[in-house]
Image (cartoon, rainbow, N blue to C red; front, side, top):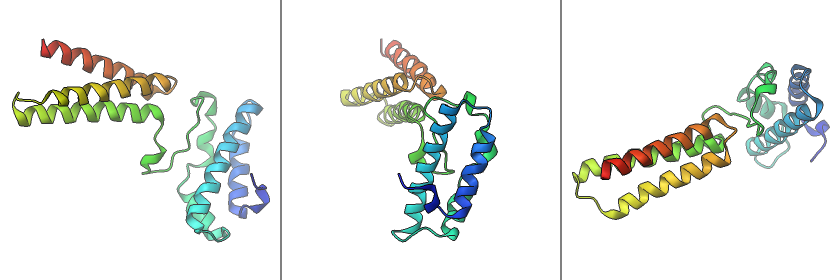
Length: 168
């Protein structure tokens, strides 16, 4: 990883502010958060700069998309896999959030297709529905510490049991 000195001044100040806000957090957790945040900012700067060295203007744009430094102060209660959120970015969803999306989208799609076909449904649709629920369940278990992971496991289990009862 490159030195922090290669960052524009605004980024160094932002990281120092985050570090100051994390003052009560255990040092190893604080360092993990700062390393993750630094890597994320480095990635965003590279994307924004498009191959040229990042400027203060690039840093201003990237930092405007970031949460304020104070938002990291409650890191004690953050999940073990701290995820940096950038507003409006689907690729920044946690595994638990993806699990819940798969569960709900698969259920919704199956319901719509059943309604459209009015009961004359291809058995492959049921396999698709079941596959979505299994994927959601497994992803939810893998991301159990994330509140969305728990929600995905519970929702996929309830939806699967409910649909099996409906089919009987």
